[in-house]
Length: 380
Image (cartoon, rainbow, N blue to C red):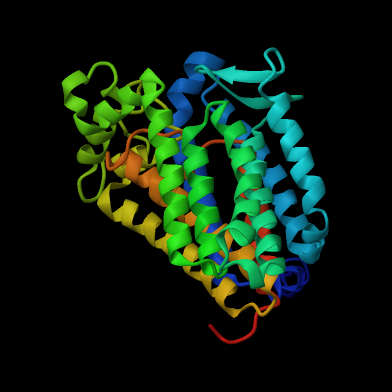
């Protein structure tokens, strides 16, 4: 019996995963397991009150995870060069989805933001697809325009113009946090692709001015900035979420209050199972648990950059760098928001926060990263 199980393992697991980065896979798998535990812990009270069952959100997340694993299996096996060929079609599809989601009655609206399309029982967020599609576009653009990247108007402006159109649609949803995340990721890709530092800095300054205007043009964004500067000044309204996050972080101490014993998840901390799940994790698992999760993220990002550095194909190198940078920035931005180091933004913590399309696209991009990693050279 033992020999039979070993044979099955070798054929189904070891055989299928042969050639893929085991550290990257291991870090991802452990983060997903942590996410399942924390989603169950953080969502039970909410699910019981609003859905009549304490496990309904965990069940939904497991269904999303099955779809996500299937998507990852596809991206691991389909030759990654194929996505370059279909990038123009994916750009057109994403553009149409971003237009459709803005149509009243079609796009699904939550808390004043129209960001989702309802497909049967699944809510799909087009901006999650946009993250990958723009990375593919920029990677292809950098590979084709290497000789022109040191020229601002001939090299950078055409690519930035396309990016700007898509980011404008993201802002219209509105989704300021995702716009910032995508813009930073793509500018870093263009920088490592060979653009001059001065051109990148001027582009960042331009995006920064647009960002300042967008913040000042909406009162709720200004309230978030003011709450970030002094959350205790209005701790029952605009500063409520970050104050509750502080309480969760401070209550955890070194070892935490224990898994499942969080107080802040009892309808005190908004978005406890989504964007602010790290605060619940810190409360229940303490500093030790939080540092362990940070170490897993660090391993994931490290192996992602190893793939980018050791891949000879230029398109694959840029895609791997873009995907890894996107994950790294999203992790840092989420943690900074939860810790009160940045104004509140609606960005989930990859692999751990509750979510459908975010989880599916995260695993699809991880599969693509693993796929590219199979072609790399060297022993890094």
